[in-house]
Every structure is written in C-alpha cells, then in structure tokens.
Image 1 (cartoon, each protein chain N blue to C red):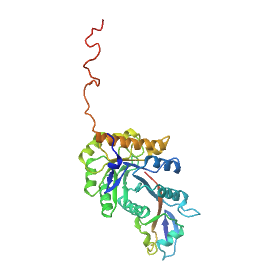
Image 2: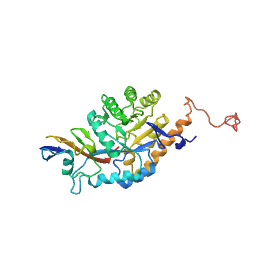
Image 3: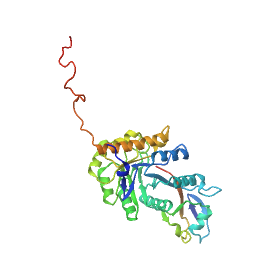
Image 4: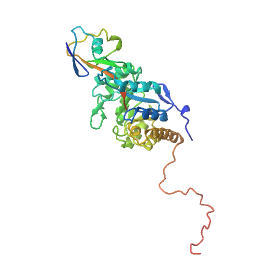
Length: 65
Length: 274
C-alpha cells in the first residue's frame, strides 16, 4: 500500500504497522509519531495497523521560542 | 529594597521556580552560544519545539536534532515544549501529545496561530484548545493577545497562568499596548507572563514593574550582538523590575519638588545685584 511519511511517498505491505513504517525510514530516537493527525503512543507502534493513504508524521526535538 | 529570588519564587501550577525569566532556544549563532546564554541567564524554563525528522543515511534524526537533545539534557533546565506552527486545534492536541511523550513533561506552551503575517494567536479557538489540553492533563501556558476577556476565558477553563504578547513575535518592539497590559494585570490574579515582542531589557523591567510575574523571550537575546551578555542583562532587568514592584513606586507629580531642603539656602533673599 502507498502511504506518506513526512509528506514523502512510501510503499509498504498491506499488513504493515506503524513500527514497519518507522523502520523503513530508519527513525532514530528521540522521536514521536502521529498518524492522520492523531498521536500514537510509542507503546502502540507495533500494533497500530496502517491503512492505504495514511499520513504519518515522525518528529524530533528542535530549538524553539 | 531588593527582592531575594529564593524568597519570592515564581509559582506555576504549584511548581516553584527561582527565576522569572523563561528563555527560548532558537536563532542563536551556535549551540555553544546558546549554552553560554542559558548558563548566564539561569532561566526557569527553556522552550523547545518539534519538527519533522529528515531522513539521512545515518538515521532519520540527523546530528542537529540529537545535538540539541543532548544539550537540553546537559543543561538540566525544565523544558517547555511549544506547539509553534499549529493552525488548528487538532494539530495542537497531536503536537502537544507528541511533545509530552518526547520530552517527558506535562508542560506545554500553547501556540495556535491565526494569522501567518503577524503570528497573532487564533483567539477564537484558543480557549477550546486550552480546555482540551487541560482535560488531557497538560499544564498549559497559553500564548495569547492582551485581550482581557480572552485571558479571563483561558483562566475559566483551567489555565493557571496566561502569557499575553507584548508585540508580535520577533519584532522586539516592546509593549505596544501598555494600557491593556496594565488593565489585564489589575483584573486577573493568576500569574501573568509577557511572551513575545520584547526587544530590550528595559521592556522586561517595565512589565515587571507593572506587576507581571515573568517574561518569556527568545529573539531579543539570540539576535543580540553579544547574546550571552544580553541574556544576563535581561535576567538582571527582570529581577530589577520585580524588586521595584515590591518596593512601590512614588506617585508622579505635576510640578517640580526640590529634593534638596530649601530652608537655610545660602544667600537666600540677597539681592542678585549686590
């Protein structure tokens, strides 16, 4: 299935989880994630089943005001 | 009279802070300068933000993000994550929840932008966002305008402190609406921190003299020619304003009042021509 990770098109098997998506982009701690603008706790990565056209955000800490 | 910070802590959501200065971490010339500025200012909290990871050959985090993360851990100052860049309540909620997991803190600086040119908060949806965050267990510090009714509504939904702007973010103009900021101080009893728009230590001192409980600033320090010295100047100004507020200012007079005693002035009543 086709998904978007940080707005970049990616392809994953139809039974993929969020953990698979994070592994695909080699996500490295510290990071957090959301799917379709909904936060997904770290403890749910392995069980959160993805759907076609899901939009995944993988974020990291940066400087800010 | 000098106010001793150890006897006059800033209290937010029941937590005491020895400093009344909150400092942003963005736009410094280098991480080393940021670190030195933080050590000079000794702020109560440091703001931070979240952005997308960029894929790199060595991992999605990249060295820049991890470097900042390591700096935060080394400085050991409480982190106040923000929701900068969010334009909807849904984005705010998701960003805050990611920040809570990432930074391991319930603190959140609520930013909900309504206008990209001025970075003015979306005042029509800010209260809803604050309310949802508080119900979710966050300790919310909302960035808002100086509108009295808006600030009161934020308090009504559970915000235990409010952060009105002095001027648009990054302008350094200082308080553009002194009357409204002073009225706000008179009307609300919760801690008030001025967030955004300060450019000079005198601006910070001024709002502290008005009775504000603290200030949050970033650009005024980061873009100074000597950010480390400016960080110290702001810390001193915040403390000076706080002490002045406690000391109580004299009432302004319409006419001159000699400070040196008049009685016994030499040559009193001598004719000027003799």
